[in-house]
Length: 190
Image 1: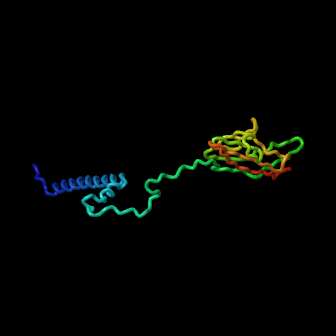
Image 2 (image 1 turned 180 degrees about the vertical axis):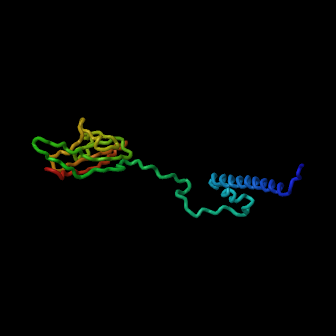
Image 3 (image 1 turned 180 degrees about the horizontal axis):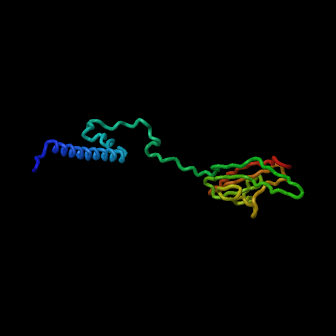
């Protein structure tokens, strides 16, 4: 005996088919939303851009209200080529330790750091002079680790002086000299 299909059997198949179709449609919408989010929503902004047919042809571009930085035909100002110190740091005090007869502590180094601009030579002078012929060549940028007198670092003359003058001189390509002077005072044992 064969039974004829009933209306309820066909409606179940129809409901299942519609549910599957709706699910596929829902997944397609979700995929589209993720695609738009993944693009950073750049596409909708591009759609809002007026096209030539949206803009009336009688309008001309508005003149700029802000003045330009340089009038037409003028060149930008020349680069600064002057010799100088970009930065310079040097403490003005040091601490000498007298120690005792059996223990003579090392003398403290002269602490200094510098960065030059447009210099071709630099000199260290352990005095207040700017006569580079008596100076010691040093790098254009550096610190006390690059200041050597012979093979020895420059040290504060503890017990000989309570204060001492120092100078760094920068020399430009045209011979222009710029100097930084500083005085260091011993605040420790005399």
